[in-house]
Length: 451
Image (cartoon, rainbow, N blue to C red; front, side, top):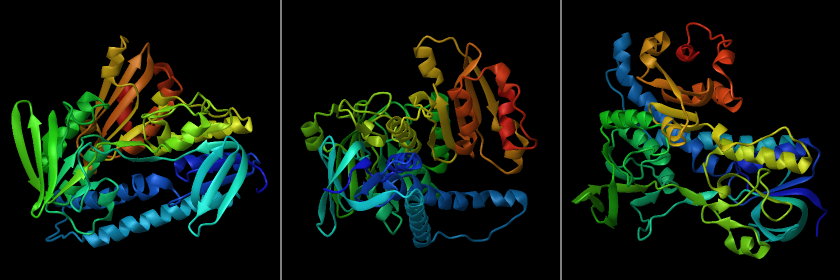
């Protein structure tokens, strides 16, 4: 057995990376084990490759606006292989960046499969078959997540998961997307902007069921304008791959629907990757929704922590990183970090984007809170108009004069949500917000009516 480590982390995604860096900065001996690519799901199958492709589709879609500012482009064509090259290059850069973080922090790394064999021991097996058991004072589980499958539906050449779709090298003529949450809506945006005929099928009564209802309806209209055929309250009955593409049988109320397309994309969410044999052997409490942790991200077994997608909830890279900072801080005796699910901002990278932090209007009303709603429109912002941005709005939710939630729908919403996330997490009041001086002319002046 090798020398003892203060911390062994299994999983090199955003959570594992953040924990390793914090622990190393605090002079702990750290080993991180990753079986796939450094950077995890976010870098290789989620955030990074999809955003690289969405950048391409947005540039292409925005060409149609240029005539309004005196720029005429007579012809434009899609080179999907070039887009794929951009996707792959950005993924490579992100993965190298993840490795550099670990190198700079002097963290020991192993590209291998990690297995917890006792509360203080981890075995790793690398690609050559070499196996070693290392001892650890603390262990962090950061196994990540996998696509949630639909019972009775099997993947095939033309029925793909959100992981599989990133490997295609030709655009389909048409596609059925099953699932109208974050992933489904983003892919609907991407393919529709590239001229693919898109059918989006959602079981629930609206897309983006956990987001602000008005924002979701706004995006529904924008997707429809792009040509996406959206079917909500629609149940998938069967999905088959045939010689002529895919055929879906579905039901909406009493109506039976048949839909055909070149390919189908299953976007019914992701689920925690749970190695149940290890969890059961160690006596770690978990459910299908994830590993149970306390406020320090520790499981019921002292010294074993879990962070990120494996804990269920919002499966977001920055959420995983914040949980990891809390766990690593607890291990190191540092109390600088805290975690509150309501303070985690979320972004839908559709066009336009939707970004939210804190509570939604509907959720606040369901809790019986008396709220004041203040809205500000993109159409009233001179930079939004000058730069030909899409329509959109900011909705702020105040309770007892404190900002408890905010939603932004529109271009650059992902960037604009950060100051509101800071305000919500610190419980800032209207009086405190009124000391916020915003430069002119900027898009951020959209916040002025909220002050």
